[in-house]
Length: 200
Image (cartoon, rainbow, N blue to C red):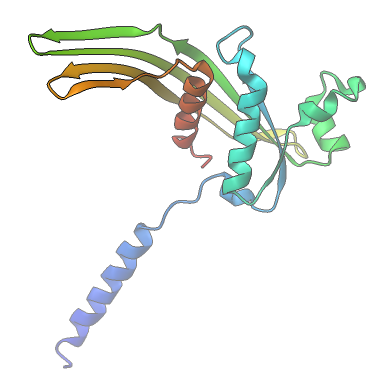
């Protein structure tokens, strides 16, 4: 038994070391559990995402509040009622709303490709597919409003696609038709990019 003791101790230490290495890394937002923060989404004027900015902002806020112990506020909704704060977002969040942090998410380089058809015609079958894709770059900064400094920043890319298919063969006709929804394409690409950042 005494001869086996060193091996048992060594095995136990190996399990502890590898077990600790397998723990899931904490994302940036996890570090601010219990805090209240402002979130704003920035898009290029007249870009594909510009017209959906309010909906995308709401989707981001709802997602973060569902998955993290954070109270997230859209300060623009409150600034509309107090025009004297126009152009002073950081001050408004800090002095008027009493928030300590500002998370700014930007969507850049948004490309929504026109539907791309593909057809395969054979003697006993017919296959037709139309694909629409979206790609974008997501940037983020997390600012400490009390000190006025950016404490975290980063960027990532995301993409999405929608497909419609028609297939005719010996087993009949199979239709999988989807109306192109540009909002869904952009939102999906945005969240795919977000999940690749260190925020989550």
